[in-house]
Image 1 (cartoon, one colour):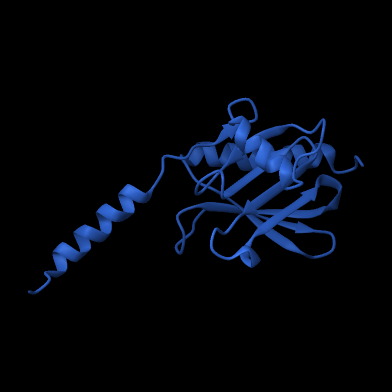
Image 2: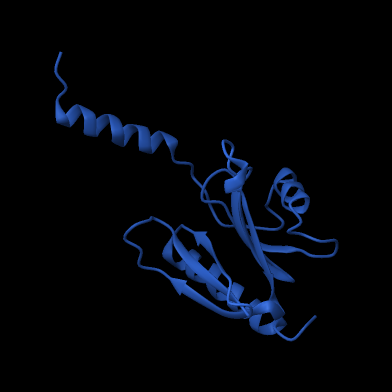
Length: 151
């Protein structure tokens, strides 16, 4: 039995398409309660803090990027290896810089790099229509600038 390269490519493309989910940028009001509860359980959302915008580049139960009234945060939870779990966040006064990357060759999602005053960094990945991603990034940066001096 031989395999034709076109069949292999077709199979791979179908697998990729079926595994993709139709993720979208959400607001704190449209986010499912289970997702908000998970974020709170990870220590990334305190009482009185509200999610402004949220995006998951996978399943919300495993990955998410968002900004709130007090911070910017990202989480990745690995089912197979808990040592790969990552919960990163920075309150606005801790942030030294925010850089955005729109043109990405190695991945499909655009991202923001958050640099904290202690020089540590983490990324928030956001995908979607260009104007929606730009709006997410711009609103996150504007929220940071408005809250940079608040403790």
